[in-house]
Image 1 (cartoon, rainbow, N blue to C red):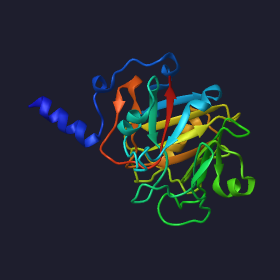
Image 2: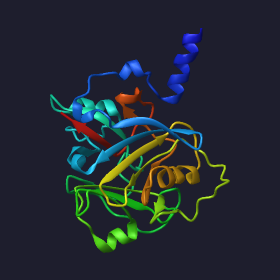
Image 3: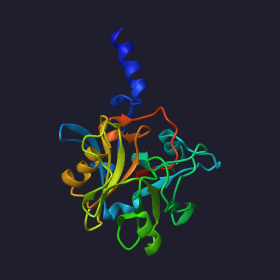
Image 4: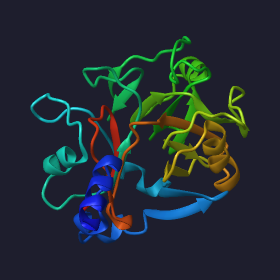
Length: 255
């Protein structure tokens, strides 16, 4: 009976037990992800350094043109010898899984930049863009500033709201908010040479999540990816979340 309860619980959470995702990782994929804690809340944190920026990838569709939707779909299309070190959902998407805002994959635009406000978290301005491979290895840029600067990006994904903006939390975040979800996002170091991808292990407010990036990691800028649909694949820490179909997915490939 206890085993049955545990299985049902894992199904509700969409999290596979560690032994289900254990595999032998190449050296380049080791040390990527860790479990950490801040202010009594657990997080999984995956860190990518500037020299490994080319190993980051964005996915949306498979070779057949259909949305990949799940981490297993990505693993199936990787060429022999390549291993998925970690992956997470990378922005909001429409019912057909197309991105809500800008999406750049290896220099090819798959979605248009949106600079206006609107409903939902995406429209909670300021929102922003995570950009890699341009003048700085990693950047999180407010969307209107991105439109003006038009930086070169190998990969880019737009989402919202911004969590941290020039060292300050988003002005609309409330310390006593009752809106709590498991949330994921990305933050960038002040020198642009480190990107931190994080997901909370329990439900948190925007204010809590922003403080993790700003106060625990020292991120000067950070961007929210999503909340209730947040998912992570990180075999190093025994995570292979499932249960929701995803649009854009970002991850680290080693081989």
